[in-house]
Amino acid sequence: MRISLYGLLVAVGILIADQISKLFFLGLMQQNPAGITVAPFFNLVMVWNTGVSFGLFSEDSASRSWTLVAVAAGVLVWLGWWLWRAHSRLVAVALGMIIGGAIGNVIDRYRFGAVFDFLDFHAFGWHWPAFNVADSGIVIGVLLLLVDGFRPQKTAD
Image (cartoon, rainbow, N blue to C red; front, side, top):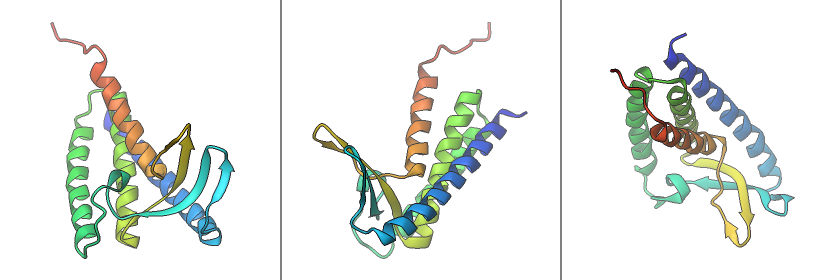
């Protein structure tokens, strides 16, 4: 099986998990808009992120969402090219996670004008920005790319 196919399968899996979880939790949170405490360190919330990661560039403007969609589309083309040329399953899986997550968030931006975030963790005085399955896929994918970057590379002698 071509290595890039692993990445495509992972991308589809992340995308499906993201969209199903958003559908479920959006319905749940519309019934509980104040949020749901799950554990002392974890809540379910309804947050609409109009910016990018961690709410950056969230100023309100009519063209902001479409600009972010266009930028994401360009990045997705580049990631797809990189996936096609992937040299290992680890890289293919990492890129698949990033691609699936990015597409999931682009779908939100297209449908709602913002990304729906619902996972809210806090502990020891720290409170992380709310996130979703797509965001998790992107972050884990980037971490896997970093791991790959630090692995010894085979050299052709």
